Length: 97
Image (tube, rainbow, N blue to C red; front, side):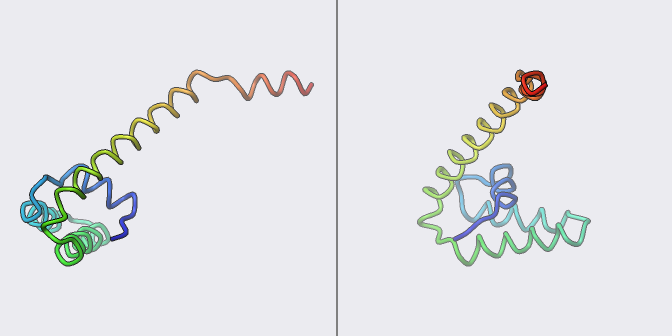
């Protein structure tokens, strides 16, 4: 099953180790969503999780997703820190002039 980064972020925030509870939660979130485009994406994700993901494989998928997204957020944090603590643009300009 292929998931976009947006879908992974939603699952990271709202999924739990139980497949049935995750699908139910996604359907409730769909019902609470006001924006039609976001509602469509949430319903699409809920259906994808319900039809394409087998319950017996879900626990491994969930833990893999958590590990992948934890690393994703750590990498984003490291990138932000590097950008904040580096004055590379000014250094390159000074050398060129």
